[in-house]
Image 1: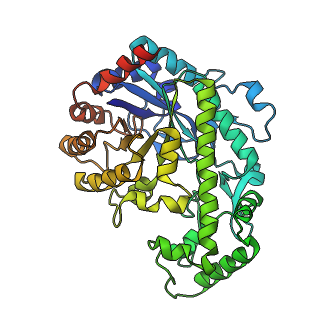
Image 2 (image 1 turned 180 degrees about the horizontal axis):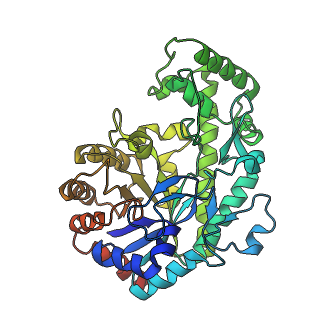
Image 3 (image 1 turned 90 degrees about the vertical axis):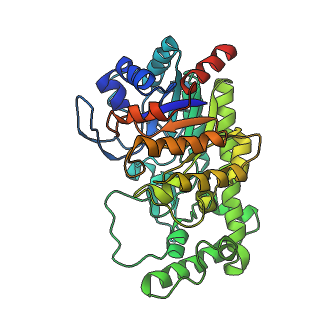
Length: 422
C-alpha cells in the first residue's frame, strides 16, 4: 500500500525539503510526499512552520516553472507562485525523493483557481449569465487546453502520481471567501445555481438535443421563485431521478451532457500525462466526502458517492478512464468511513484502484486509535493508497499518529514497485 503526506510549498520551502522528507519518512512512517503543484486561494494556520503562522495562499498559483512551448500558444496562462524565486519545486521534490527511495507525487487543483476577472472569459456561468470567478468551466476548449498542458507539464517532471482535484463542475456553496446571501437558499435552488450555461456548455447540451434556451428560462424562473418565497423545494435534491425529470426531462439530458464533458476531459488529461511520462499515474479525486464532512467531520445521509452526479461526475466512467479513484474520507468515525468506502468500491470498476485521503487531525480524529480504526477499514477493503491531509496544517505529533496507524510495510511498498518499473 502506498502512503504519503499532502504538503504545501510553504512546508517544503520554510522547513526545507530534507527536513520535511525526514519527518514524513521516519517520524510519519509514510512512503511519499505529495506537493500541491497547483492550488487555490485560502487563509491557513500553520502550527509548526518556522517562518509563518498565518498565511494567505496565492490565488490559483502553480509551483513549478511552466514549459514555454506548452503554454505559449494558449489563451489561458498559469500564474507562477512568487514563493519559488525561479525554483521548480516539483522537480526539486522528485530529486530529493529519488535519493531517499520515496514517492514524489503532485496534487493538482485544476479548475478552482480564484483569479477573479482575469478568468471571466473562461469561467462557469449560471442560467442568468453571471460568471463564477473562482472556477473555470470544464467544457470551455481553452480551459481544456490549459488543463492538458498543466497535467502534462507536471507529469514530465517525473512524479509517480498526480492527485487530480477539481476537474469538474462546482457546487454553488463552494464559492468565495466573503459571501453574502440574506435569503435562504434551498438545496435545489443551490444546485440550479451551480449549473453552467456558458457557450461551451450550452453547445454540448444542444448537441444532445436539449432546448437549452427554454431550459435556461425555466431554471431562471425556478431560481427566482426559490429566492423570493419560503416554499419547500418541489423535488428533494437527494432524489436524483426526480431532479432529472424536471422541466419535462430536459434537465436530465442536460446533466448527461455535463457528465460527458467531465468524463471526456478526464480521458484527455490521462492521455496528456501518459504522453509526457508513461509512468506517471493520474488519480482523479472525488470530493463527495469533503462536501459532506469537511467542516465538522459529521457527514450524514446517503454515502458520499451519492452526490457525484451533482458535479457532473460519473464515478465509474472516470475511474475506468484513469484506472484509479481517490476519495476523501472526512468523517469522525470509522463506521462512517466504512459506509462511504464500501459505496465507492461498489461504484467503480473492479479493475480500478481505490485510494483514500484521511485527516489525522480535528475534526476527524481525536486519538491515534481513531485514526488506526479508519486505516484498518481502508486496509480491509484493499485500497491501493493512503494519503494524509495535511503535513503543514496538522500539529507535528499527527505524524506519530500516522506511523502508529499505517500497516507494516506501507512505506516500503511504493519504492519497491518504482525500482522495478524504472
